[in-house]
Length: 400
Image (cartoon, rainbow, N blue to C red; front, side, top):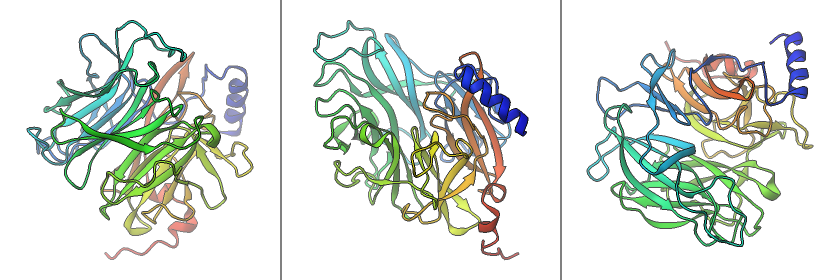
């Protein structure tokens, strides 16, 4: 953006923050909404391996040219008597699970069932009905879906509260693990839990992942990736006393992540800056290391003194240490949302994916593009252009 455009956007932002006319750079996915997710097909039908499936709440998209273009794929799955509400995940099984073949797509999200609100001394949720996380499966690259299971449902100990933000992985023992954010326990404003299945239909061993001793803490929005080292890297936000700052932790087996009472390790770059809200993380090949690197995104970037950073909405964090230790470095984001703020649209829970054999980074990020209209913007840029020039200068030379 030019300085004049930045000034104009800043004035509009100050006057009408929910009707931004200055949209993120990139291509708007027609019909898209919030909470983008993306997955590359790698384990199913050979003709579709390499396709990229993207989702925003209610809508699915497909790219058959490595992220250069996307076209509508259809509506997100739903069922009788339930309504899709938010915060989905889409996951391809890398191996068979029970009678589900490798390459099966799983879609899970928050749904509400049309039941009468329960009587409770706790505040009723802003969304009426009983919450559930429903799982659907597709064997034809997302064109058709069938109901698979409901890992969690109900109002729990409080008699009210949300079940949100599912996330899948395959653990070392071959089980399918689902993580989610849960408001229904009396101990906590919200905590993070896990549950597992050997067939995608029957779920057992529900237990805590992050549940601190402070009731006001609201850990949420787990995203976890299996690394080439065989370990698992998890990222999430810690709200309440931690102001929704972004934290991480590791696992050797995909199931055990250390004491639930431990808030984890906060992500910071070399300048002490940090993210708040709606994090996501991926592993990517890297010109800086043969082991690749972690790339993380958060909604709003803060300085060490708690002020919003000048680079807010314009940078990602990366780390060539695959345990996430030490300071991360900042790199430019393919989709910049420079006026991101605490709101469930601008730069909220963006999706990242390596493309072009790992030389390029694809990002899908949301922003306002009209009066209270939020959509997903997609763009790709070579990693060599996103990584700071002083680091690229130190990159190991590749043999020809």
